[in-house]
Image (cartoon, rainbow, N blue to C red; front, side, top):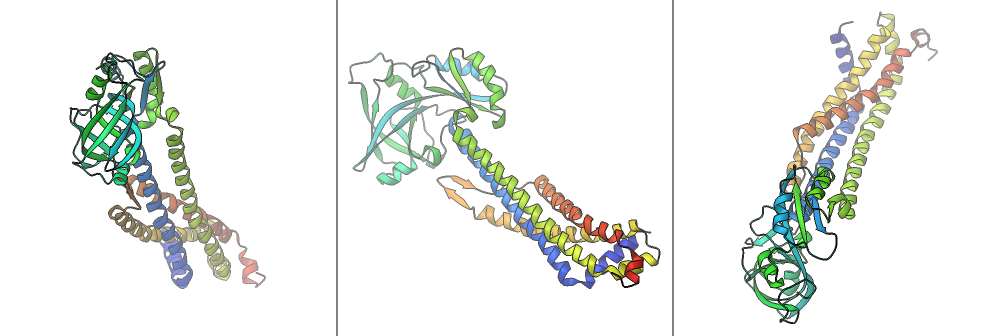
Length: 391
């Protein structure tokens, strides 16, 4: 039998039951319209989480002293680590316990000395200007600034504990007091910290080459464990750890997002498979006499199977088209109106043509699989029993 005849019979059968047809199209459309924005939002959240925690955080691989609290000759070591294949940048960072006072408020925090000229920093600037080399300015966490009522351009007082570090200068009581101008505000993971230039903090500690850690940024976040052996060879005696091992919470969060994406995918498949299977099966039972007549006219079991399977294909294609339009509209809306926006941590859906096509093909395939049993059932019906009125 020509495929055109099967297609004609399949489309005619769908027109005869408009309510069932639209219900099945709606089921497929809802699945696509739900799955695509959901997966895009989860992908956007995962990407933003990694970007804030690694790109604008403490790097993919962290090198720290195995003993003591600081790395000496950190600039030389950073240059060696930057030559490891796959490493984009190796940046030394210096940390010290401190307290900040401003507008009658005070709190303790960790003060970080960073390289202003580096491409990557352990923070994301949300207001003001980037940090410069010098000792008269600071980047302050947005949460602290909000509590203190401090804004860009205001001055704060920093008291930095220096005595915990090996130093050459010991006549200052072990701590330093500095009045600095807030040059900018930083958010999310850095919202409870403060940042100055490393050259300033290191000079106050009496050793310009000292660092608490060296942060390695790599091209592929998930390839960080492969960088660790080579980095360890470049930094003998230091502790070298990938972010997965050094930040269990972040690793668990990323895995949780991936699990949710899988659960969302399963829900989309079920949302298509169950109603399409049920409605097509009911349609098959209601059309038994028509099936018997087609068989008596010379239609083979293969012809019947193809005819009923084409119904599932038509329903799936129509549902994917409608759901795809709804999904794209929802994604565009969510890009303009993010579901989460706090201190520069903005979750916007990430949708590519590849992801859209993969989802559409998966949902369409599910509709075909769901329609295969009713099609097989129709092809297996005994026409003689049907025509005699036994079934």
